[in-house]
Length: 264
Image (tube, rainbow, N blue to C red; front, side, top):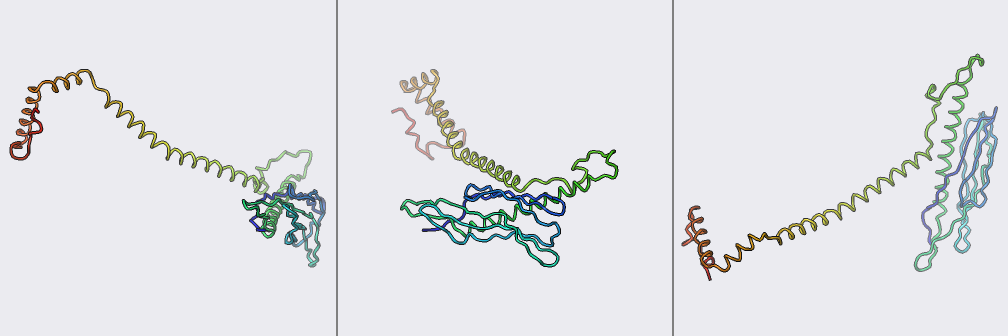
């Protein structure tokens, strides 16, 4: 069986709220591939020196027919000023994927290394965004504490630029995807017009010219018929041509043969 790059969307939810001397961390994988999906809340002390995510597993695949199961664990690790580290488990993931079969029936399973990479990237982004939102809420709450509550005046985020909410990275990704899709559609329309419109215009122009060329007025038809039946008219036309050439400084008797213009 062959392996392929990860093509699944992993967009977990990770939020952090202040609660006294602690922080409440709420996590949900939000993945339809997660057979053990369950929202979980853990409490960690605010007085930490370092905080990071620990992702383990996803390196051993369990294959059963068209299904591949990958297990992993996500934990939040804190370290205090004394160097003591504490691991807080957020989730135990069991991601199940269905293999694809080519024309020969060969199954192509998802690559465990790419799954682990995708999970780590998404979790790191979620943690950064959750910490940013948590700190923003803390700044807003600190700015809202007034010495005289009786005369407190409502405030808005615009009064505190540092506490202004920023668009989430998920919203930015969706906006970028929509913009890219609109640009792709516009390029496709331009390409179709560039290939289709010029031939259509040429065909229409040729059809118009052909139609106009086929239309002769009754007077032109009558003159042409009269010249074809009257040798004298042809002779007069030959003489007129000779005179025209002579007025241009040409000698039709030497430089060329005008016998083709004579009546037959």
